Image (cartoon, rainbow, N blue to C red; front, side):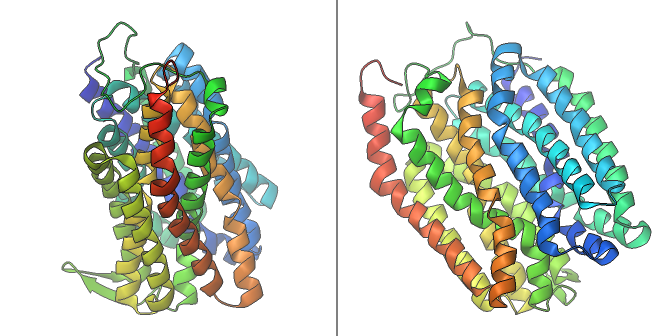
Length: 409
């Protein structure tokens, strides 16, 4: 099974199976709080642990993928994904909840890093699009299970939702893992002129100032999106719109349910869309457009989100303008540092998401101190605006200079 489009399809299917561990989390925060009375900030520490373990271990997992191939790493990921939600189902203390988050983060990192790394290796000519399609599986994958998870939580409790969805997701990943392959080194791959002609080792990549600019920018943009991902349900309850019916596209659903479903779809659609755009107009120009749109969307959500319909629409805008980072950053990283160590190098950059994850509980603390979400929205918007400016002012000239240097990736 070496056809690259088939490989892309298997990667997308694996990504769909891990999506709920991140994007379904917000559905469990309130039920856990209601049952045990733990502070929401303490519960959200589990989300930060998940993000940290998912992101910061991807370079190690990528190292194994680059040397031993993708199947072994994805198999391990499937086992951990299933185990994580089983642990969550029986977690009667915060330490156990944190353990489940750590196992889930490691498992998701194994699958995510492997599949995105495979996409950028198989498609040097359409790297943004391929990375975007793969990442779309992670973004949109949970959209189809938002309502089923909510119903299981309502009918049988959140514990049953953790247990059965966790087992199902883990088993499907195990079934898909044997079909994954990496491209052979002697397989002809055309390298577009705007990309590096040689591959940088991870050590060389870490010595590159351009890498750390990319890292800083990804952390800035990740922080706002992760805040929305983890806190959307609490924000909806704070704005008193969570259960208000909203009619849109011929459907009528509670505002929070509608927002979560639309957000997941748009968060997935944006990844191949902006990846495709970046293949044509350049990564930096695409970043400027997307990050600027994200800054505007966050500000608008903070100002107008108390209207149920606008909460749904603006929430979708925020996720649409955020999800593209998971296609743009691995694509530009591989453009700059080559394909030989692409999984490891993209994994090193992906740890910026783990850094950003540390700010999720801080958002809850700021709300507790100020009594509203105003400051959180302002900070998140400012970070996106800064990243947009950096894309054109620093990133583009630095990338062109790096690729133009003889003998340097």
